[in-house]
Length: 108
Image (cartoon, rainbow, N blue to C red; front, side, top):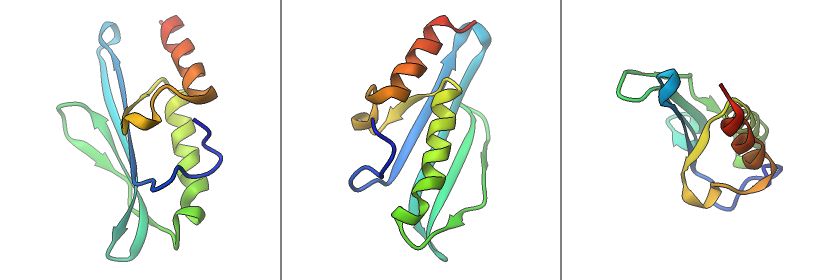
């Protein structure tokens, strides 16, 4: 997937990283949603089945204005070995997804 511009009707993306041999089961949720202060980037993360952590929502006027921030977090998660869990339309496409798959298969 090309992350240079926002996908049509972007709302959220859910990442997952599961490595049983290393006892890793983590998730990372990134969204652009309406809040009391207007639209904002919302981030939640943690170990699956445990309590979650949240960053303070960061308000932006529009998705286009927020996209550099969202793109930075998307690229970081993919580089750190997370897989895109939802939405399915974002899975397995583009250079970063291919790089991540290669890392996951050689990682130890």
